[in-house]
Image 1 (cartoon, helix red, strand yellow):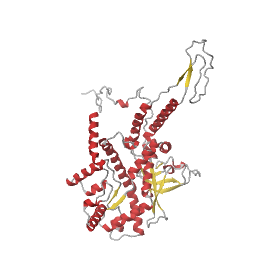
Image 2: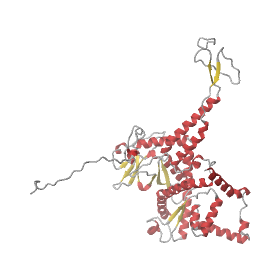
Image 3: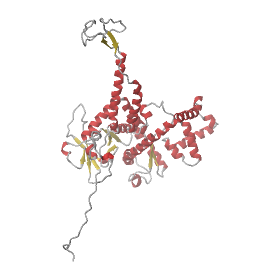
Image 4: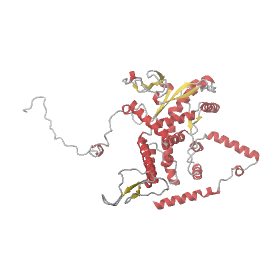
Length: 488
């Protein structure tokens, strides 16, 4: 019979062993304590709270306004992303309706300056962190569709003081019970306006009428931070180093010196007032007191490292935007064909991703509202009115400017090879250039018909050849690549 009490069981307790394996990056030592001092466990919205975002916006705007490189980088990014503006191609079964809507949408986009507003929104995302556009009625437009985009700065979208503790509101963004934005609180006057404003004078705009775009870097993030945030300290360092080099150069160019004597104390040298200043005249001889000599100051000049430092810091600045150094610096003097093409591949892929984001978040929403108003104002024939086109967006695509190749001759040969091998289509090749293949083929057919009517051959209709020096471009590129390979 067991001596254990009924209902009890013996449990073997194993001795606890210390966990020997660990991550070095998780260890806090005297050497890395200061480096990780600002690391925190805040949520995405808490880390990017209103005060933090306001400070980052102000500093980013200051750099873009006063730093030539910052302005050029942001403007280049906006220009490369937007180009001359997107073009709509409708892909329904009714070719007549497609051409009508494409033509009218292009006229409307020109009237409301859609390309310019998209460019401004892209710049705002880089320096402000986010962009807001209100879809509103504008009766002065000379187009049947009176829809317009009114851009709003991020400063105006904020919460009143009475709503700061509301969990369903994140700094001006009202959320529904599913966590989706349902409305936005917008100040009627910009808080930085010279006319002054009343903090409680808000208007609430439904989310259906507001376009809000930003780069969501963390789950649960509802407001954006400037995309150039990691580069802000680097811009300051670049400016400080430039001013230091300039100051050293100015000091070296000026005639400044110091008086000294080799005579022992209380020796035969004339008495001179200590720390006295002597004003010197340019191109004049100078006499020294007896026993004293003059030596010109020679400040250290870091000019030999300035170019290398500038290149490295600009490369680091542009990295947070996936922009290569030669695009950020506006200088490709140290590049050859191979290195330029490789750097552009990463940059162009980033641009295409951004264009797809803008098409989905901005253009598709604008097109849906535009089609509804156009159908009501003008009307559409066929079965596309309310039963199809207005219930959901019809099949369509957006064309952006094509990326210009660094070597058009090589790209043309590669394109010809792809078409001969049936590894591509005309639609794809034209789309890479930002063109509609149907429009281009119709234009080409008109040109061929006119050439036949005028009795011209293909060769006769070709433009005059360019400079003969361009014929040797491929040979020069190959020689540069061979020279770079030998250096490596």
